[in-house]
Length: 144
Image 1 (cartoon, rainbow, N blue to C red):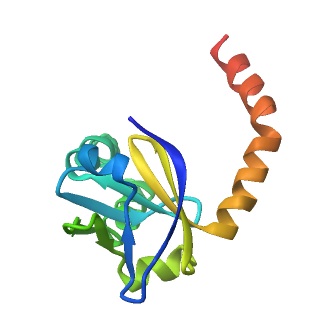
Image 2 (cartoon, rainbow, N blue to C red):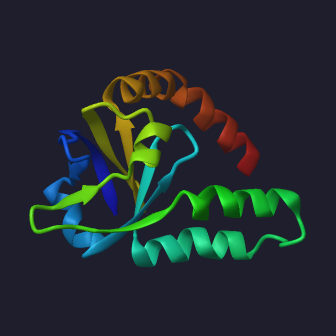
């Protein structure tokens, strides 16, 4: 399970050093793709297929929305090797999508990492921390 938030920097060659505690769980290579909230998602290759592949396989291929989701995830995804220093290359289009500056936050979110521009992460964190209690109550009512 991937947990915690870690402040890191992206170097001049657009490489991000992954937190050491995540490297073993991720393995030698990862899939980096667009997230849904202007961040990047980083999955271990096996987890990518398990989570994204199976979810999209369950959708009707004749559905326009299903095709759009497939395009969104697969066209923006890239397989990346983790080098000996624990770094991954962040392709320029993905960096642009997530509006990443030099300073970033790598957040462990259960089965994936999210990579955020540091200032965008702080704003996002302030929003969800301010509303978490209300969201939890709404979700609890839905389960009843």
